[in-house]
Image 1 (cartoon, rainbow, N blue to C red):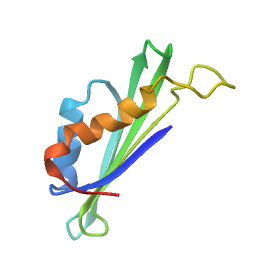
Image 2: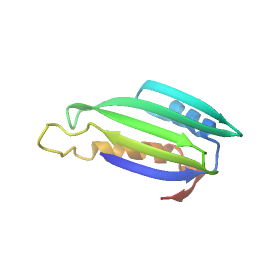
Image 3: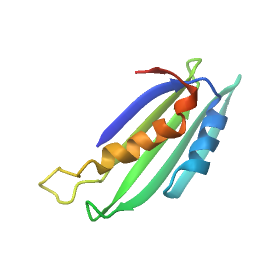
Image 4: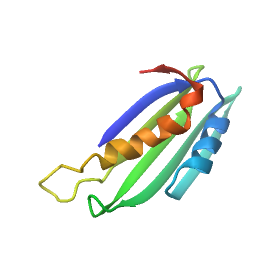
Length: 111
């Protein structure tokens, strides 16, 4: 499992749209909630098959501005080849980092 957390200078809706348009994976679930007063939270769930681990890898992207700035969380999981061995040749890290690459022009602070 790999996780990235960072803040961006654009709204959650803009960030979600950029990730949706540029992520090279199958979008399996999407939801956005307007919390009022300009606050939003959105979730995107992607799935991608990685040959190097012979397995599908899931990517969960959560973007919100509940506490002011737009916060992005990118979590990749399900990448290890077996139940006992938790080694994935970097697949989880690569998938989770793809969101940071997509939004790199807007990152204002990594956490």
